[in-house]
Length: 291
Ligand code: 5GW
Ligand code: MN
Image (cartoon, rainbow, N blue to C red):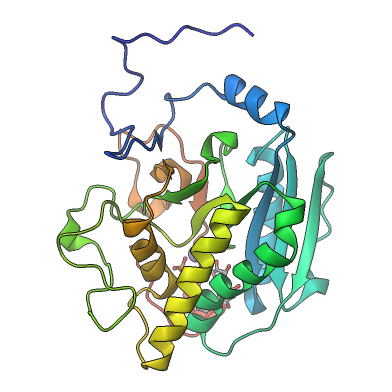
């Protein structure tokens, strides 16, 4: 394999932070050589599970989600798409590349949207133990109202990873929409926290995603017993988890962008984009924090 040698005096990016104070890489275009990484992960015959929930009307997002994933997600590697849905018959029948497979998983529906969103932690935790552990090496857990629009590959894989929320990459701590009520298990004090992570994209090894989803689910249930619900549901609990269990890799906003946020200079690629929703048609009510 032919590639340019790294150079101590030539940092690959000087406009953005590329490593955290705990020495986790932050993944930006220009900081990695995809050929070297592909070689490493192919040598181990890595299998990646991509989990997505499509409950009720959200099945409409699946076609574009899966078609764009076939073009951009983990190309050349083994992939299992785990589609959690109450309507397995509505999962589109798409021709997949070799080594890739769609696995619908029937799950129950919950009447409140907050519950649909939060219960993902419980279901991921259950299936991590039940089947993912014997079927894949890494899990990548994402929202359904998304489309891939550029390369998303093995550079994201690590023991446990989170993604910087595209609305908060430049924000100060006090502006992060962490849960600030001490009665909630998701509470984060004003002087703690590193980044504001988005609930729509996280992952890691099956063992680590098991631990993460178990803690988040237990804390969600503890809150429920005290009749409190964190301000941004499971995203608040994920942020709490990452304060005390630092991610081993962090994905830059290249990995979760929303075109309504414009085209900042530092953003060299838009890899995974929010699909604009007709909020009235797709759901009853909710104000997104992707604004
Ligand atoms: C329904 C109404 C309001 C909010 C969420 C839903 C909903 C979410 C649903 O009916 N079905 C469903 O499968 N979901 C799952 O939860 C999808 O995977 C969705 O991507 C995820 C998070 O909900 P989003 O995408 O509406 O949340 P935001 O914060 O990205 O707008
Ligand atoms: Mn979403």
